[in-house]
Amino acid sequence: MFFLFNTKLRKNLLAYSFTHSDGEYYVRELAAIINEDAGNLSRELRNLEKEGLYKSYSRGRLKIYSLNKKFPLFQELKKIVFKTQGVEGSLKDLVAGYAGISTAFIHGSYARGKEKEKSDIDIVLAGSFPQEKFFAEVCELEARLGREINITPYLDREFTCEKKKPGSFLNMIIKDKIIILKGSPNE
Image (cartoon, rainbow, N blue to C red; front, side, top):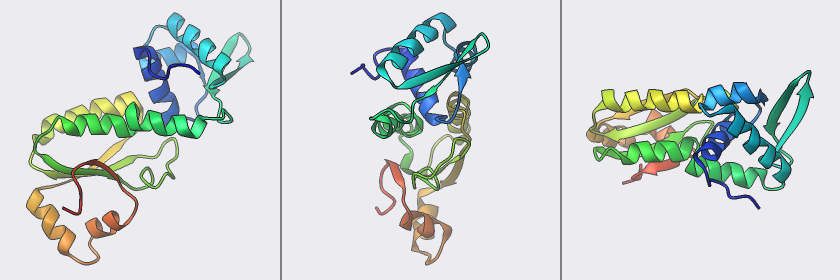
């Protein structure tokens, strides 16, 4: 079995590919998207194709690559990539860098496991933090992942008050499936 994240190139490739698992790309196109050298990427894709994780076909002189969804460990690898390199892992790392954020979680279609390639990522944040800096970092993350990230920020006291209101937007979200990034919405 291949080493999952043994190089920066592989981390970037898998994070992008699993976030856009329906995508088909030729090497130079994908290299431009993930900002990697096309020669090295071509070699990496050939190696991953030999392992069975990617598949390819020719269209004229172009070789088109895509993830092999029939790979026996596809769903397990998708979960690992999401938790470490993809949306979830990247957001956890980002949120961890802000001590003022007390609670953060993902909700919506992504949290329920029903996201599509173009689905946005919805997160709720509670706390006091430099929002302008945080939002700038989110914009960079959106560009890297190719996904829109929607943020609903609350101050801690607003978060606490909103949780106490029966039938509130926040209560409906918390009762649904969520992915905790930091803290706990029930604290």
